[in-house]
Image (cartoon, rainbow, N blue to C red; front, side, top):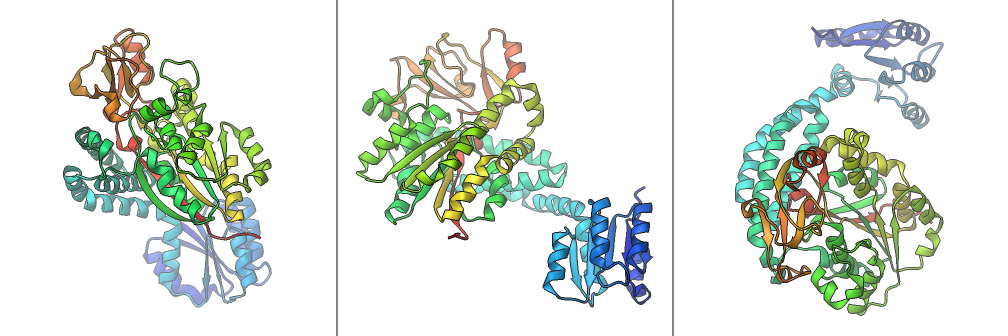
Length: 518
C-alpha cells in the first residue's frame, strides 16, 4: 500500500495557513510545519520529505538562505517558494538555485495543489494522459493505415505514429506494446504501397520529393535569395531521433520541419550519392563513371562526395563557392570549429556527420553497445547524448551565432530487424542485410520486392542477369550456410537498405537562427 506524500511547509505565519493545510490534508497529503528556516532544515535533514514549501521572508534564515542549504544536502527534493515580493533579483536567485516553482502571495489552495501535483505526480499524470490519448486515437490510426494512398498520407501517418511512440515510451506505459503492433501493421501496408507505386516515381510529375531533388529544391532557392547556407547531413538519422534533439536546437533556431522520401536502396552508397549529385545512381555511373564505385569494389563507396557536389553545381550553372567536410569523430568536429572562419567565405558549406551510422554498425558488432541501445527508445537516448555532448551541438551554435541558415537532413533511416529471410547468391553478392544485388539470386519472390530491370529504376546493372531485391520491414536476409549462427548474430540489430517508413520517410529540416550575435 502506497503511503501519503509527505510535505514540509515552512512559514513564519504558519498559523494563518490552517485552511490551506486542511485542504491539502483532505487531498491525501501529510503536512509537517515549521515557522522558521533553521527548524525547517533540522526537520528536512532528520526525516524524508517528498516536497518542501518555503516562505521567502522568514526571520533568521531567509527562504533563499534555507533554499541554498537544502539544495546542497537534498538536491533531488523539489522546493516551492512562496513570497510577497515581486523583486526580479529574488526570483532570479530562486530560479538560479533550481527552485521547482515560485508563487506570489496571496496564494489560494488550488494554486498550491497544482504546483504540488506538477512536481509529485507529473509522471503518473503524463502516463494517464498518454494512454488515454492513444486509446482515443487508436481507431483513427487504424483507419488511416487501411486508407493511406498518397505520400502525404504516409508522411502524416508516420509522424503521428512517431509522436505516439515517443509519448508512450516517455510515460512508461504498457500501451507502447499495442502501438508497436499497430506500427508494424502500418509498415506492412507501407511496404505494399511502395511495391505498387515505386516504379511510377521514376518518370512522373507526381513523384514525391526524393534524394536527387533535395539540394535543387531546398538549398538552391535559399542561395538564390542571397543566403549563406549550411547543408548538414547526419547519416542514418530517423524522424524519432530528430524529434529527440529538436528541443535542444529550438533554443537557437526557428524550425520548419518536413519529410522527404529516400530512393532505394536506402543505403549510403546510393542515397547519399544521389543527394550530392542530384542524379539517380545509374545516371552517375553513366555520366561520371570515374566517380561511381561498384558494389564489388574494395574502395569506399562515398569517397567522391565533394566532386559530385561540384558536378551538380556545374550542371545547374551555379557559381556558388562551397566546402565539404566529413566528421567521423570528436577530433574532426573540433578541427572544423577551429577552422570555422574559413567556411564563412563560402555560399554553401556541406557537413556530414557519421556518428549515428557508426553507432548503428558498432551496435551490431559490440555486445556492450547492443545492450546500451537495446530498444528504439534507448537508441534515441544515445543519439541525444551524443548530440548534447559532442562538437556537433557547438557547430550548430556557432552557425546560429553567425546568423546563417541550415538545411538538416539525412540520406536514409534505419529499422530494427528480427525476421530472417533465406537468400542464396554467389560469393560476390553484396553483404547488405536489407537489399541484395547479384546474378541468379535464389529467394522466395513473395517475401521481397524485386527489381529485375535496374536501369528502369535508376540503378546500375553490373551484368545482364543482375537483379535487386529489397527486404520488407523487420526482415533481414540470411544465407542458408551457417544459418543459425547468422540469425542469432543479426537478430535485433538496426539495419538499412530496404523498405520501411523508418528507412524511406526521413526528416528534412530548415533552421533559421533566432538571435544573431554581432
